[in-house]
Structures are given as structure tokens and as C-alpha cells.
Length: 640
Image (cartoon, rainbow, N blue to C red; front, side):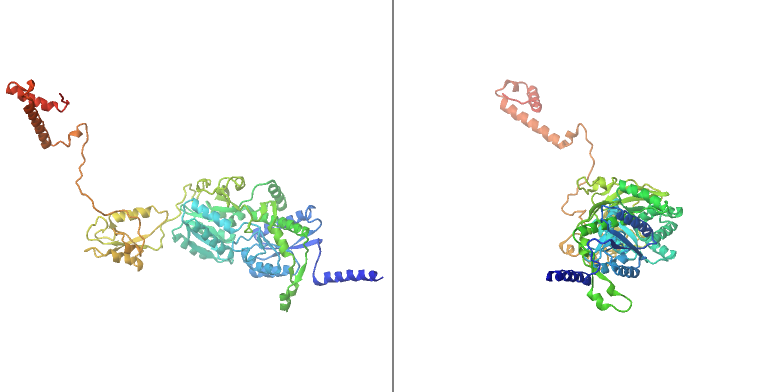
């Protein structure tokens, strides 16, 4: 009898415990709520909205995943506003969602990530490329597209590949633009290149043409003719239009646009005048490998949109983000995860007015779902969906395209595995890792001005700072360095060496020579060197001896002239021929040689004429014998 009463009490106890302290507990609920936060009226947003809706339909109609549980997507627009994005994210948190697809803009991502961290709701962003959204500060932020860190590496390698040393950068002055330029600066520095000038454009709409024109005039005055454009589409088209008007889209200029231009070229048919204003521009586009699934989806996309809206890489990443989340939720359920939420006691104490902070709750198993997302290993429309230790998608790659006529042509690829190449990156992954500069190749480019010749990339700046080069105004040994009388010019061996070295540099070095000394007596070279340390001169040129005390305060070039003991002799060019061996024999030497032969003949006659009949006879015969013997010693070896 007691057992009969005990069982209902046990069921009642556990039922009250389960429903009294947690919300929405179910091992496999009928519906899982997911939010989507991006700018619906933007080019990326319009494509992403349709892609996400189609992905949800495909997931819910696929019986091999979620097994009866349906995804329910609620979309909200942030308009790339940090404030609106935060408000919409807080509204999401009141509906007990398990994840958010988005956001699209870096400004929104930085703010919403704090909310996501607090309530342990993962963010799967298909559009934010800001490289500063690190996993350490924002652990619940997961980037399902490529980071600008890779894109800026591609830009830096292109700059290095073509031999340029400095670039000018025009960027939109927000988190997306500033952090992207910061990454570019780091990547250029690794390759001994640099940003020589950068200028930001306000992110707000309504930037007038006069502002853009003033900005481009400043860029045109700089030495670099390589311009990197990292802005939003509306600002980018305005910059190209004004640049065309100012003649900055002609010979000598190089324009590199980041992927903002690529997704506009893929998504919409641009007006002819817009395309005309950016001929010869190099553009980076996120590389999506070709596959049957991608071709089938693009064919389906044309039927959905009627060809009025083209698919871009961000739309494909948005589609894959839904599938990646669906697989992570499936693994989450298989591991015993439950969709349950708990109240945050800190928010409860702050509740007041109409904020309804108490309605927001913490996703209890948010860490488990996040772990399943990061451990995903599947293949989507964009290729492998797998994260490395830095939470970046593996196989980061970009297409490099060249805007020509009414379209564009592919000139090559970049990947973090193989660098620059003419072959698609997926064909190189099976080959041994090799980033040697000898295998980095791209197809030919039609540069601005419709030329095939690679631009030099720099000119002498009109407003650049002139280096003050101190030159000794000598009174003696003027062959080394001297001032040309009646002018401010200098000449001499040292000046020739300096100008030859400057002309070999691949960038501009504007300078002016400044005389040091009165020209009546030689100046003190120690004082001349000390003038560098005091800021009077930036460098000095002359026949300056390298001594210990001077090397302690300045750097010297390699010696190109050496002093020491020398022999000064007149130089006369001598003719050579068959009789050159007779040149050392002077008349005196011939006379002395002849006398020696005669003396030798006389000595031999004295010793031989008493016992040798050949040395006897009439005096005439004896004289002839002496001379003959002396002469024969040149050609015969005499012996007894």
C-alpha cells in the first residue's frame, strides 16, 4: 500500500524539479530556434537571405539529419549599425535561440559578441572578415568565411611579386577598414614593403564628391602609384569615378581592390560607365572550388531569382553556415545535449522599466554546441568546412581577377598553401609544400591605360620631403668632390658614385646637396659628420675617411676608394710583335755583350794558341779564329 502512494510522489517530485528550475528542457525538441542578423537591404544581405531560406528548406526536408527536429530561422536587419545590431541581438536572446547566423558587419560583430559571450550563444558569421575578432576575446564568435588576414597576405604577396616597395591605401574608417589596413601593414612589413600613405573615408553615407576629390589629389601627390582600395561598394564606385576624372586611371597607376568589388561584379550587372571607370583594376575574390553541388545550386539559383540577382561567395558561405550548424546540432543531440536555458542572476537584479532583461537567459549547453561547431568536418558548396587551431577555415584562397571591358578575366590564384599560382589551389594541395619565389607566377595583366607593361609603381613626389645631403666644399683634391662655380651643383667622383647608387633604387629618393665650407680651405670632416647627429644634414657625401670615432655616431657605406702607398709611373702604350723580345736590349747592352764575347775569345786564344794548332798561324788568321770562336758560343756548346 505504501509503495502505491510512494510512486506518484516520486513522479511528482521529479516533474516539479524538472519544470520548476529550467526552461524548455527536451532531448530532441520539435523545433530549434535560430536567429539570423545581417543587413537585409544590402547586396550581401539580399543574396544571403535567399540562400539561408533555401538552406533551411533543404535541412528540414532531409531525413538523414536532425531526425524530425526542424530549424526555425528568425531574421532581423542590423543595417550595419552597432546600436541597432545590439538591440536586435537582445531581442533574439528573449526567444531562447541556440545560435545566430551573422552578423554581417564588423561594427555589429564587436558589440554582439559581448552579448554572445555572456549568454553562451554561438555566432556563425558568414560576412565579417575583420581579423581582430579573435577567439581569445570572443570565444563564441565563429567565422564561417575567410579572414582579411589572408586577403591582406594575398595583397602583400602581389605587391612583392611585381617588385613594388610602397603602396597608398584608401579605406573606410571603421572597424572593417582600419583593422584590415593594420593587417596589410603587418604583411607588407614581413616582405620589406610598406604603406607610404593612407587615408580614411567616413563610413556614413553622403560623402560628397569634393571630399573624395581632395583625398585623391593628396594621393596623387605621393610617390607611390600603387593604390589599395579597401572600402564599401558605394564609396568604392565613387572613388573610381573621381579617379577617372582626375586621370588617375591611366598609365603608371596600379589599383588593387579587395573583395568588396568582386561580390558586386558577381551579384549585379554594373552600368557601363561604372565599369569604364575601373578598367585595369586588380580584384581579389574568395575562391570557391568547382563542384557538382555548386553547379546544381547555381542552376537552382537562376530559377529562384530569374537571373536578376547573381550569387556571390558570401551567399554560398551563408548557405553552408546553416548546414554546418545543423550538423553541429545533430552531434549535440547525439552527445546528450539539451536545449535548456537558465536565468542570469546579475540580469535579474538589473531588471526595471521596459528593458525586460530578466527575459534573457543563458544557454546551458552553449559550450557543448560551440565545441561541435568547431569540430565540424564536412564538405559544403564552398568546399571543406573544417576549422584549424586558429578557428579559421582551412584552405584559405582567393581568385585574382583583372577588370577588362564589360567583364573581367582570371589572371591567377592565391592560397595560404601555395602562394601565387596560375593553377587552382585545390590542384596543388596534394603536392609538397613549396612557397619558393621561383614558382610564383600569374598571367599577364592589362593595366590601367590599356598597357601590358608593368607599371613602375612610383614617381618622384611633388610634395615629398627632400633629404639634405651635406657635401664638403673643398679647396684641394677637387676631383673627389667640388662645387661647380656659379651654380648650386656639385661634381666629382664621390658625387658620381652617389647618383649612380640612387638611380639603382626601385623607389624615389628626393634630395638636395648642401655645401659645407667656404671653398677657400678644406672644411673639418669631423664637424661635417657631427652635423648628421644634430639634424643639420640627413646624410653626407664625400671623401670621408672611416675612423673609429666617426663609426660610433654614424653609419658608413662600404668603402669605394682606398688610400695607402702607391707607385706613380707614366703610362705609355707599347706595340707588340714578333721582335718584342729585342725591346729590353738597349745599345749599351748590345755593346757590353759584344765586348764580353771578344774578351772571352782572347782569353781562350791565350790558353790555347801554345798547344792547339788551330790557334796558330798568321796574325790575321788568329784574329779571325778569336772572333769566330766568340760568335760560335751563341749557337754551339764547345767541348774537348
